[in-house]
Image (cartoon, rainbow, N blue to C red; front, top):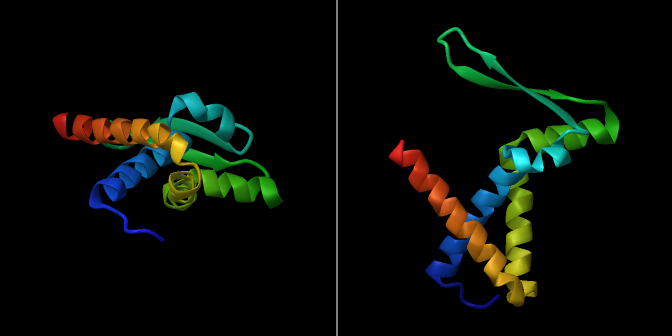
Length: 113
């Protein structure tokens, strides 16, 4: 493996973060989760909203549902995808960069609120 610069590492970290959130939480990718998960929002005792996830099915379907409901698990696979694209498909670096910029914007937005 070649020397990895801190900037490339930072870009891959942010891209992995954004891809993970895209898969686990974003509405635009709900079609990926819908066959495996049922997600609802419920009020908690303090008046806030809590995300409730129910796994659909058993066997392989249940396993995929458990995987898609866990941001730590999806994070590993997202990172594998990002690193593979970075090293095997360098012409796709703009996709990684777009994800990284979106990830950085999400972090900034979180702290701005």
